Image 1: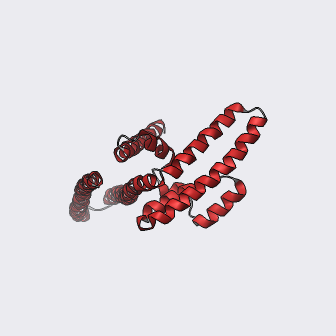
Image 2: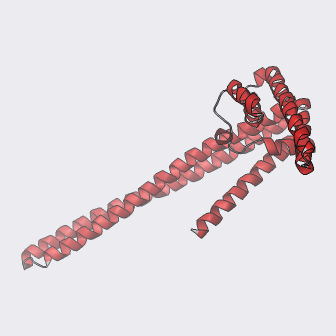
Image 3: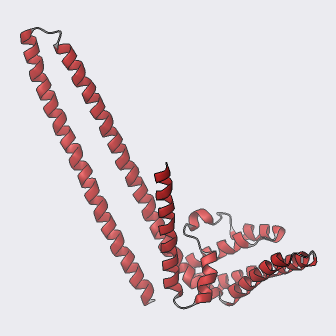
Length: 253
């Protein structure tokens, strides 16, 4: 259990480092853009971003004062629809304006009540929204490349997990087959002990044939497993080459 937890922590760390490296690559020397997007982009947008329509999320935000789900949705949709860039720039700027208005009201209230630290935090949120309004186009451009890469990787992860489950199923089946064959051998051995000499000789010959057939089946399963491992390596090499090609394309854009 401890080992599995450590492995998951290590995998999470590697994913975060990959995300940071990709985002740094896309933002280049633009530290402000990187700082903003490091808080607003997700490694798994499919899981993190609401499936509700943007209009519904905006309506809910206007009632609750929490515009973050709508902002996340707008950035993600904009990243997937670059042909509608101008429309989404206006949508994002409108959401930023509404967020600023709601945050200013909250800031004024908490500062009147003496919560200066909270007020300072809300002030930083206002600055973030002002930045988002100014740099909406740059945010969409980077988000498009970032989410495109993440969605490709997520698709690869899903297919890899399916292959892993299939290999585990095959391994489990092989173990069960081995246990059944072992039980059958023991049963035949016990049965031979009750036989006469001639009958036992014939039974032993039959056992030899059965064991040879079982050995051949096991060798065939072993070869199938090795072929699956070779195929997994080939897929990994193709994915690696595709990843490098996408990286070159991003740098060329």
